Length: 191
Image 1: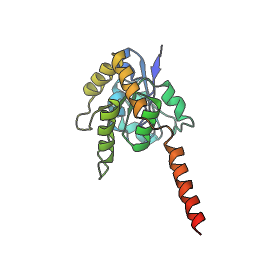
Image 2: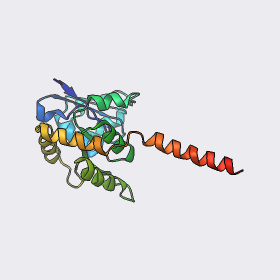
Image 3: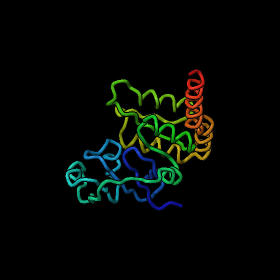
């Protein structure tokens, strides 16, 4: 059983622990924390930050430790360790969630003019059962309740995982490459 969890801006780690009685450790690589990490900081034992100035953005400054920027060389390992992903809803993240079959809570960025992340999150809710919390709805109670509802129900976890895997297109890159190569091949034959 897990003993700690490390949420990080936009990256999936083990299930968020307040619901499960685990220690919370946050890693914030941005100069200013997002709302999720800010709210989770009230529950954190330690908040690792990338910059000295970021310490000032957290209410419990004595819990902050400047560690520099985290770079994961193996995102596959981060997904493998995760029970639940709490993340933004960028296109690559959504693809990774589907490919790894991870249950997810998506918090789409409202700062994109075209609303791509909200649309991605809505699609993920439809195809994989992902839960969507907009920034306007986001607070520690809403996030904690949603985490508890998912983590606390093995049937929900299994359903979300199964739906994500079913919707995944793990061979998409190879299919696209084959199609491009066939177009190139066809155009060279015409010459």
